[in-house]
Length: 286
Image (cartoon, rainbow, N blue to C red; front, side, top):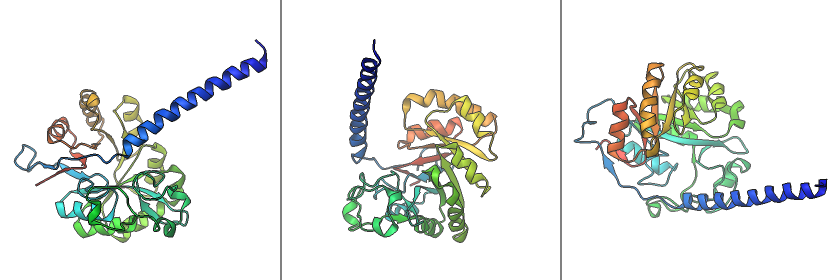
């Protein structure tokens, strides 16, 4: 086979693979864009009432207000959540803001990459999606500073997901805000290097985000002082494995947390397995 023909075959195969991946990604993304319905629930009257369980509002109380918005954190505070979780990026002009995706299209009315915008440019956008959005006309992006203010107001523990490892050199600004408002905070990340960078600045609890717990991830978490593991509690296929791995984490001296758990029975199971930090969209204490 000559070189040109071989090159054509390779390029054709790569192109086909790229198209297939692109179609898969678009299907996944449009499914993800749909607003998920939630059933509000609480642990009052269950075996969990009165325990040391810590309920954390995932992206705020997003079942009753748009995710990662100031109203979502206000509602979390009013509902009595122990903690509130947010996702953070830094704008082009150095403002830390609260937003889940690297681009704005899913929840805002324009399509922009967050970190390529200035804060004022982001303020030109309004939320276009979220539960009870009609109650919050012209709703704008929330700053990390306003998030900390709200946590302080309602005595909520702040749980902050670090979203872009390229911003490590600016983590000191996050710590400055946390200290300014005197809020207890944990920091979480999928990229372990983010946690390594944050550990140099604070002795706060850190959590390594994983989908299902593996021995290799336990070993990695053990290399950082006061670093636990937070796993996907929404994927029921992982529950049997994770319950066993929760035990391994605790035997190794690691704390565990879980995220996106929205039914009380699953929360019971994971709590009884040893996880007391539960991030949820829809379950409250009362």
